[in-house]
Length: 245
Image (tube, rainbow, N blue to C red; front, side, top):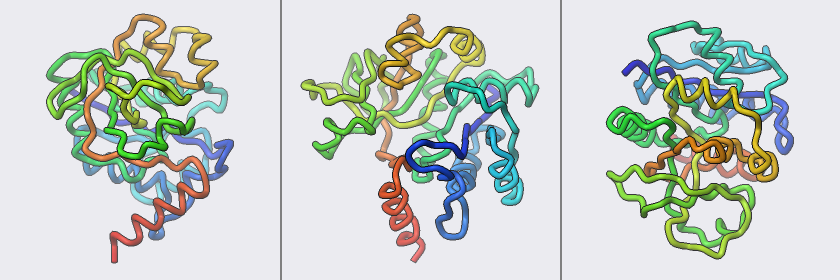
């Protein structure tokens, strides 16, 4: 199956403005993510951004980038606009990587891609085991409840996604910021109105569940940290710079 990887990005993040262009080891966060996507080697890679500065940075570092509208409510809408602009009719799967997760594991990206091809699912995503008990209480750590426990080979259905603290512990995992869609499912998803559940919880994946679109979840080897705050950035910077020594 022919796959395209699209990384949505914007400078106007509320908690850490300008984060895609923050540098680690002399390279911007967005360009680190781009290189991870390239190394996964599952298809051509593009960044979709509303800011010319991001386009320029990615291009300067040898990547491909598409300028998109600044009125999108979600990253998925940005991904779909980029897909239309790229204009490749033979694409069957779209991998949507979050532009703020430079520690995403390449093997996890490949595994999700393989599961999508094998099972012909509509939408797939990744989740990891929760080792840190404080994650259950943190609203910025999105959790997913799955129908079955996740194993290395099992692609289980998502029942719900949540931010708030949960009493449940069984089959609750840390949701990672990555999605793979069939092109037709992506087209259908962006045509739907935002659901009240999605708006209330600030989680766009709930729009799919609220409209009876199945999301399958694969177990990730590693729990990638996203850059949401200055503290996150410093923690990731320390990890990545230490690993080069």
